[in-house]
Amino acid sequence: MASETIGIIAGGGQFPFLVAHGARELGMRVAAVGFTGHTDMTLGESTDAFRELHIGQLARLIGFFREEGVKRIVLAGAINKPRALDIRPDFRAVKLLFKLRTKGDDAILKTVAAELESEGFSVVSALALVPGLGTPAGPLTSKAPRESDWDDLRYGWPKAKAIGAMDIGQSLIVKNGMVVAVEGPEGTDEALRRAGRLVGPGCVLVKVYKPGQDDRIDLPAAGLQTVRTMIEIGASCLGIEAGKSLFFDLAEAVELAERHDIRIIGLTPEEMGGE
Image (cartoon, rainbow, N blue to C red):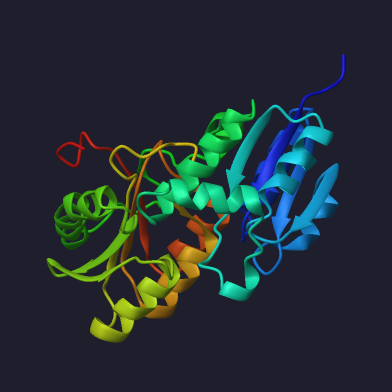
């Protein structure tokens, strides 16, 4: 029996590579679409079929996946806000834009997912396909958060949930009971750097799953690069929601964090006082 071909709509970073690797380890073929200026095109070397497109070429994307016999699709990796010159919307994409009531990241991605499903594809969560990428619950470093870290984690959790509910971001940075930076379109690393410039070392990063979030779309994620940026600004602790987030290069990230006395913990709603 022929193996299933999984489709990947690939943004930037290592996430698409990890999904491709995980799918191939499960014996699946991988067909991926990458976007000019956003995707690392060496992804093609890790897939069985690959197509480079411009953002907005929706009809060509659908056609490629049909040609490859794809039934299930994973959205993997961030796509930074593109410049106008990077976008090449075809007629189908233009029609899709008119369906949008808001322009938040989730709204756009949900609309794209719905359009793909109207064509008979199934858009699935990366965690369903590669569960090993999920963040475990509890302390991930040998040392648990300090009491001062816990104070900032508890303070930041409900506020991170609130900004998530407004589709602003998934992360915020707290120091001494004060929110010092909120993640926006620039991403977590730049939000951390902004916090470091404002208040110096000792910050706590809180990263959560947005209330009502579609788990197929833009899951919260951390990894080795997150820890590197935390070291850069002298951050103290990372708390990330367990089970509903992705953690890349976990072993390497934990080892690096321990060398710099950064505490990492997978948080649950139960211990943080609810959703």
